[in-house]
Image (cartoon, rainbow, N blue to C red):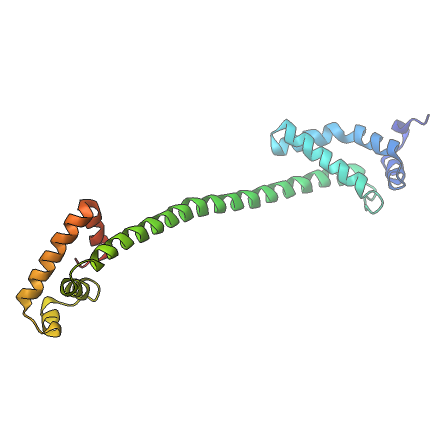
Length: 195
């Protein structure tokens, strides 16, 4: 059997391109430790350094026929390790940004969505109670709280006195406070801020 350890890097590169597995094994055995140390210095993780070296040598074997290694095999291998490291860093950075954006969406989106659902449910309950007010009282309440008209403007519009409008509002608020309870009544202030 041929002793590949006697071959030069240039000879091994030529044999590698022709698909010689023994030449590939010799290149691997000759450089795996120095490349591992180089990768470990960058990654500070044994497992990641081993994985990176495996990826580099897998790529070399897969692309052996088209590689442009040139005269300096060790320099080429160091460059491959460096490039693979850069690819990992870039990939990890993109991955982290993507994960962070998903986390932010989930944190903000769910809270925002949950808030909107609850707000809409409260608004429906309040609107149902407003709709159940006596017609004239309901009309006064809507003109005051939704259309933001003053008591004077409502009185003029409904052809009644300002005092009557004021009383209608007081009664409407009492009825709503009683039907909705304190918590929902306070929400009414949030939904109709000019209360």
